Length: 223
Image (tube, rainbow, N blue to C red; front, side, top):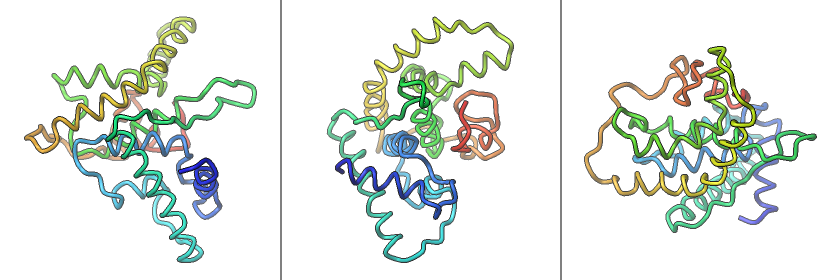
C-alpha cells in the first residue's frame, strides 16, 4: 500500500461510522502483526470485531467494500513482509503535540491485543525463549511502569528511558523472531491453553494487573 492509501484507511478508521471505537492505524498495525504471528490461524471474522469495536452498520455496500479492501490489503502486506523476513515499516505517531518522540506504547498495546486472540499460552511456564522475546513489547506498552507505580515502588526515569531505547532498538528484530518462533512450531503438536481465551473481566495478559477490558481490551485506554 502506498502512503495515500494508508492515509485513507486511517481516515476511515477515524470516521463517525465507527463512533470512535475503531483502532488507530498504529494500534491496528501492531495488532495485525501479532495476529499474523500467531501459532494458529486467526480468521478475519475473529479479529475484525476488535478492529472496528464491534458490529458496524455501514452507510452503503460501497463504503463497506472500500473499507474491507483497504483493511485486507493492509493485513496481507503485514503477512507478506513477515513471511519474507522483510522489515516491517512501523507506523508510529508522536507522543503529543509537544513531545516529538515516537509513541511505541499504542503499537505495542495493539500487539498484546492481537496475541490474546491465540488459542495458545504465549507466556506459559517454561517458555523462556518467548518470554525473553516479548519483554521489549511488554516494556514499551508501559505495563512494568504502571505495575511499579501501583505497588508504590520507585521508578527511575533515567533508567526507564535507557531501557525503552534498548527495547526500541531491538523491536524490529524481536517482532520477526516471534513470528519465526511460532512458524517453526506450526503443524506440530503444541501445548494448548489450559484456560479459555482472555475474557474481558480476566487479568490483562500484558501484566498490568488490570482487567483486560480496562487495559489492552479497551483500545482508548493507555497504560
